[in-house]
Image 1 (cartoon, rainbow, N blue to C red):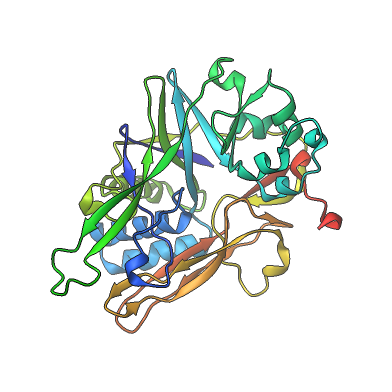
Image 2 (image 1 turned 90 degrees about the vertical axis):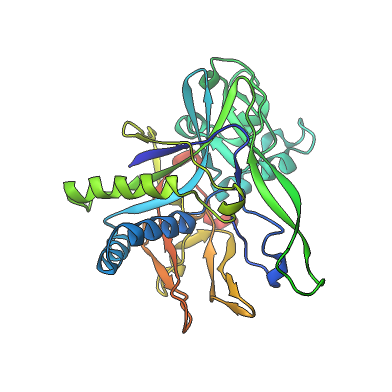
Length: 346
C-alpha cells in the first residue's frame, strides 16, 4: 500500500458531481472528497488517450481481479514541510458510548460532525473520549477534523480544509431564456501562510509486473495533469504536482478481525451479508444530453465496517449509445481493535 499525493495550488477549485433528479441541478452541489470511482474514471480515460482500446479492457480486468486498487482521495495537510494524512472516520465510532457526554456539552453532535481523523489518531487508536477530554494530546482544527498535537509539533494549529463556493452562471447558448441562469458550486481548498491542503489516495499494485507498475504511474501522472472532476473548462480540477510516497504505512498494533473500507463499495450479490455498518450514496446517473443519462447504482460510502475482506464490483451502467463503468471495488484495511463495532449493540 502506497500513497499518491496530489499537490494543489492555494485556492484550487474542484467540482465533483452528485446525482440529481433534474439536469439543471447537477452543478448546484459538489462532493467534499474525490470518490474512488472518480479516480478510476480518470485513470481509464487516461488509458484510452494513451493506448488502444484493448489496453482499456486489460486495465479494467486488472482492477476487477484486484491486481491494482484505489482508495478514495482524502485530504492531507502540509505543515512545516511535513505531510499529515487524514483518514475517513470509521462509521463504528458513531456508535461509540461517550463517557464525556455529561461533561462536554453536545459531545454526540460534535462526534457526528467529525468526518476525518489523522493517521496519528488512527495509529494510536484514540477513541472519541480521548478526542474531547484530553486537550494535551488531541485537538480539532475545524469541526470536521481531529488530529494529534504532536503531528503539528505540539502546536494548536487552526486551519480549514475546504469550503464550498457558489458562482452564478448564464447559459449563453440557450435559445430560450428559460433556465439560462444557474449556480455552480465548487469545492475550494483553503490555504494560509502556515498550512497547505492537498489530496492523496492509496493504491495497491502487487498484482502487476514491474513494467505494468511503471505504466500505471505514467497513467496516474497523466490523469492528474488532465485534471480531476468536472467543469475543468471553467478552471476546476487542476493538480500542480504528483508525488509518490512509497514509504507510506499505517502502523497499528492490536487489530480487530473487522475491516474498514477506504473506497466506495458496490457489493456483489453474496457480499451484502458481510457489511456490518455503512451509509449509502447514489452514484452514476450522469446527464449527457437532453433527457439522456446513464444508469445509476447504490454504493456504500467510505468508512463502512465489514466482517471480512470483500471484492465489490465494477458496475456496467452503459446505455445503448454511451459506455459507462462505475468503480465499486473495496479497499479494506484492518480496523483497530479500539474502533471495533460490537454488533450486539446495533
